[in-house]
Length: 591
Ligand code: GLY
Image (cartoon, rainbow, N blue to C red; front, top):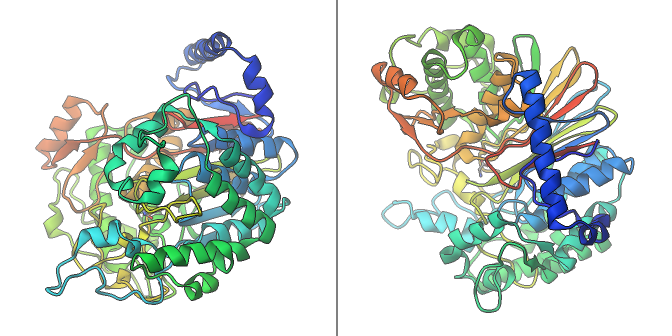
């Protein structure tokens, strides 16, 4: 069955979609969408849930952009596996969703084979250039100069996406890099129809993007206005860059013409990345973080991401509470979650960093014993002020705009991928002549111990800047296995909120028995130790907020958090996909 999230744009992917698009009139599309709504409502009445997932049996793709979902689904239908589809989707997102899809950034991927073999983590996070220094974002008085780590050429880490995708494909795919790049090249050269969200993003970021001539030329029209919904947007420079990578392999990006364009961009603007930085960049194969929650096996990203460590740490603490009985988003549940999150984020600030450079007590942080000792510190009636909380003492020493996609193929293989250029549109700087945006991931380092980064996250010594080190991340591509088989594939953007967003989808499925679409759609909460507040989305009742305030919590409603793209595999092999309605271009498609 070919299905898609009701919110999808009508535009079909460039692969084989052009003729079809001409034939399908607007009226017919509205009818189809209306029919989907009617079917969904009918199912909802039968099944008793307000949200219904997309269902399929052979393969499922869930991404934050319909065109990327479609090209990846085409790969699965043509007999490709989950990794072939993942790399194809990743490159397509670099074209269709330039605010976070990228070749100028980095990320993390989990691959979980359908035959039960070990889960593998691929780390293609950016690295600090060799000339980076611990105090490079401080002035002479030692004060942090925030714009320097966010909106200058020095903000960019050495990009890892191209090398990471190539390595992932080589290890687990069947397509060549050229084949995986083909849809992206087509989307860049032939263009695609701009959805509303694309225009909104460029309007919102106009001031910081249009400062850079190459960004203005690449992403805005000749008269300086943003591309409007319904218009066709082409990226000839990016198409040429992707074509060079297809023709010459990753060597082009790290040593060839594209590398030269990146270095020229740096040299013209006082940036740090050199040809040596690019030539020496290598992605890494990591052991994923592993934990258990009520009998489920949880795999998530290890350092330099903090995500997996703290998801497992929080789950370990919450396992001691009857979360199902306490109820979804009740004051009692939210209190336990918030108190637990505070403890985890306090540990994050102290202990987490790139394990190639610092020792991180991973075993201690993710142990059930440590969780039990932290649980004892939680008062079930009263909020503990964050100022009273410091990092704990785990046993012996031995990581807002990102995008996530989840894919499962007919063999049960699963890919969970999160990648980013940090802010929406990263640094805002486009590599002139190459057509892609550079990340501003250097802001994820601790510019100075105790000074928060853009997400309000405090970092310490473990996450200080060092040459060739990877900056700490919160990205948490996650795969849950049940009885040795892939069960839940999930992950989200959202900066510091990635960890708690991903956590809540796990709780919603495992504790609250929600289907995957409900699990991703219902309101979320977040606490990150500092600032000392429970951040909530719209939809938490006034009564609940009042109870939480009585317990001593500061509760603040802000904009929505995350965009979690998830797949659940039922025992009978049925696939259910949940695209996050918080992004209008999110889509789940299966067959
Ligand atoms: N740039 C956000 C993160 O990696 O967590």
